[in-house]
Every structure is written in C-alpha cells, then in structure tokens.
Length: 130
Image 1 (cartoon, rainbow, N blue to C red):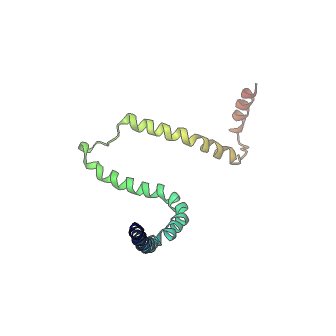
Image 2: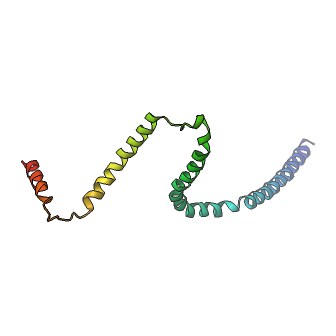
C-alpha cells in the first residue's frame, strides 16, 4: 500500500511539474513578445546619440533664453545673478577660451606692413630680443 501511495504521489508531482513547465513556456513567449521593441529602440538611440550630443548645447541655449526672458519680471527688474557672479562667469569663460584664441592667432598669417608704423614695431621687437 505504501508503494502505491508513493507512486501516486510521484505521478501527481510529475503532472504538476509538466503544468508549470507549460505555464513558464507561455510566460516566456509573452515576455519575448513584450520586449521585442527593445533591440530596435536601442539601435535607434545608438544611431541618434551623436546627433543628440551635438544638438544638446543648442537646445540648452534655446531653453535658457526662454527662461531668461520670463525671469525679467521677477526681482523688481533686477537680474537674478549679481555683478560678482557675472564677472566670475566671464572670467572663467575667458580663461577657458584663451588657449583657443592663442592658437587661432598663431595659425593666422601675418601681413608685413611697409608703412612708417612698422619702424616702431621693429624697435620694440629688437628690444625684446635683448
């Protein structure tokens, strides 16, 4: 009798595990169908990311201008940033732009002037050379 009960229990467990396998198969198919859009979307994002990287600063400027135009009515007509903050910002921007400006000046060809104004320049360069 015990052997018959054990074999009945085994048969019931086998049937139950088969039902679970089928249910898992159906769920896996649902999952595949639900996430079929992911590879295509990732491909589109990868293709568009360089364009987005270049366009982001321009979009930021457009958004900033809109916000700045709306903010003029606040603070009794005074700008949000103070004079010191603006000066620090300009100093930082000039410091960052200086290497580009210097390389631009060096890369441009200089024209030689033959007028009388070239004589003081020649003296000034000869003094520097000493």
